[in-house]
Image (cartoon, rainbow, N blue to C red; front, side, top):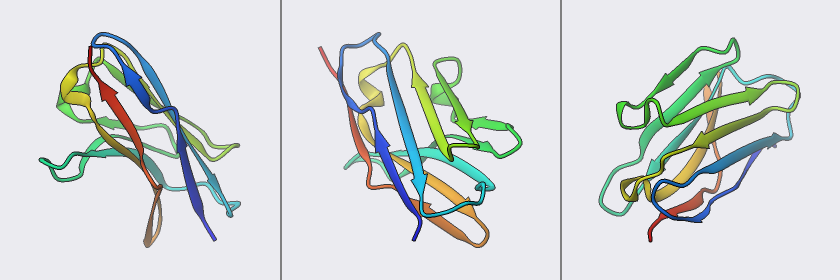
Length: 115
């Protein structure tokens, strides 16, 4: 059974940085695509960034230049380095992994940007 476990969330001041990690277990294959989404009570879940197993990346306009997604295929782990954080980045961040035809989701990790 595939499981995704996120870590690295927390409270940070505006302008600060956090690094999220998402480790997949229960599988030996490399996911076609892995990514990060976020959700707040006011906003639907939205894509933050995603990366293919070949290394191609895609970012939401709101995080371009501030966030960097990367992955370690050998460890089946995806990372999100978040710099220059803003209060509007506050959300629950979810890891998603795609292996046709199934999307797998993590349980989410809270990121709060506040002074």
